Image (cartoon, rainbow, N blue to C red):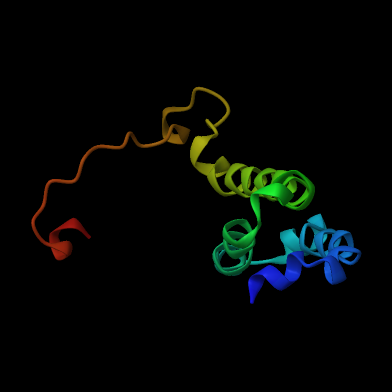
Length: 109
């Protein structure tokens, strides 16, 4: 099934397929849950079904931009957590994180 994507009959269309699936505008328009499914149900299958002889020609053009997009998503998602507030106002400083030692959810809330 998946190997048909790598058949000689389809090889001339593969660059067009790659250009659509790695288009930054398409990737950025996905929600996180859609991006997760895209990685799991499309990219992973492509990687697992690709013949080793085609790694450099078929996977390399796809994987680089996808990893770059994942890095972008991580930076955007984690930025509010990792950025320090401006100034030395103690009220603006983040509350230090400490481990939660409770046995039930209600007392933690």
